[in-house]
Image 1: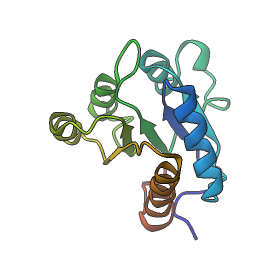
Image 2: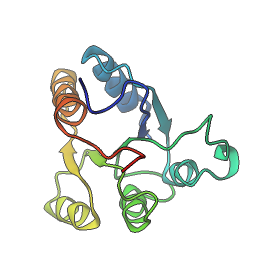
Image 3: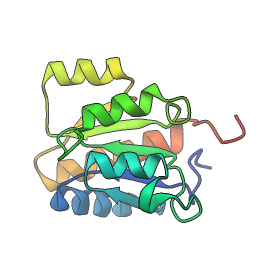
Image 4: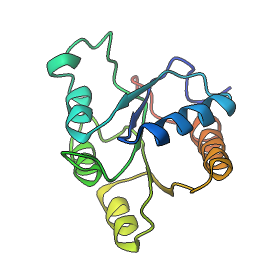
Length: 151
């Protein structure tokens, strides 16, 4: 049985429509049936996570059990979103997987320093992207034990 419950929400913070569509297709192909909610910029993601503004209904917009985060976002960029998530007690236990185009050693180092749980460079081809998502799903949804709300 997967430690990540089927009803657990995955929050994807991604501004590229194309990358979002490829990722959701890859998750589906990999057998991930969890709901995925998308925020296309950092400011909206922070509103969602703090359940403020349009997202103040915790039933309609539950806290995610995992976040997939792009770094290069309009408005508040992914680095600042990561820093905010990992600096707040109520959010820091949510695993954050950085999925980005950047292969910069500086980005990799700073993301781990800020508390990222994984850092994946987006493959340029669809097959590679699909394989990366399948491996991400296998590791995070079948191998790793994540904290529950009871912990």
